Length: 109
Image (cartoon, rainbow, N blue to C red; front, side):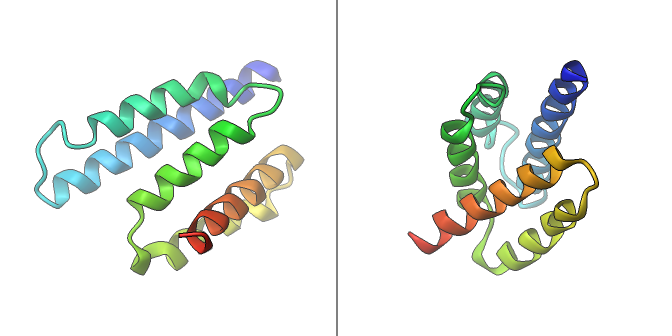
């Protein structure tokens, strides 16, 4: 089971990087516009498996907050709220933590 958790985490980070790349291309930015962000996401993959992942999750929340326009924040939070109903405890608690961190970063801006 531990291996599948790692693969899901890695896939989620890869999907986030892909979405950021697609959005930047949609807005007409160069191919390398999101390169620093995707490099940062790649480095976060290994840190998310730490016994205390609060630092990498906070960094991820900061990144999400910086890349999500204020007008899209409610839609983003609504979309991840679906994860709160996930039958797997780790998934729902993970979504709860991400939501809390994103909201904390947003409020403290």
